[in-house]
Image (cartoon, rainbow, N blue to C red; front, side):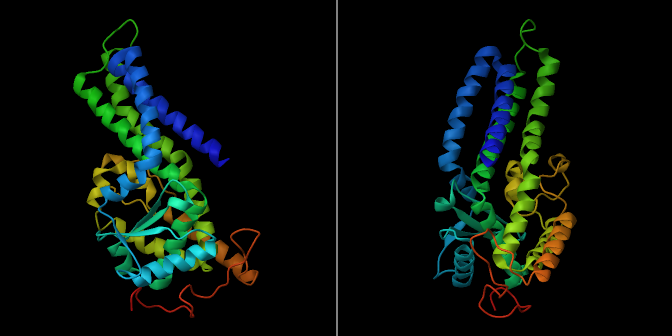
Length: 313
């Protein structure tokens, strides 16, 4: 099912790319756009993770520069049965995080400085577990490729607007239709992203809660991040809205047209689902597992009972 979703999504985005190409240059423009889309897919597969990390100024950390964070990621990755991902920090006041990489063997987890400063250790564990769930579910390849292609569609649409579109009335839709398509194509790309985003986030919430063993840690983190996202702007995300779906909470402030359609489920609904999972885990002694091969204990990922303290003290 994961491969089918990926194929449908990429086909939809490629179709949009070709449509815009046709409006710019007719049949030859569509063919050129198809070639560009194929090249973009290949390039995104190998390089999109590095592009996104670079876009947000993320720098890699290790056990010497950020020992507590790296230790937490390592322990939770072990619980999830994943290879240790690379760990990055973004110098960004808004608390948020995302995962990227074409597969679990080449994955990365990136968190903002605001996330580390504003969340407790337990809440941070819930967020990291959520991102590891994306890696385990192979969502990261899909997220990075869609961000790259959707961004390319927006750029191509702007290029078409500048040149006025394909004006061959016999084979094209005409200038009015061209302008309409140039405006609607980026929105269409966003809608395609939304088609699987909600299900992906719910699935990552569920698996992430099982990895860390405490659904309410993640629920508390989601509430804090969602509140902060409306107050603390992420200017890089505002400039690159095609990457918004990669974050655990939509990083866009909601003041622009790009936020008419959200790429994330309602935070209230996500918290309600986690509360239901917590009740289920409590009823079953906290033994619900990530999969049928192993159970994850309810102890804190820091090796001691839960405490409401800052993540680094």
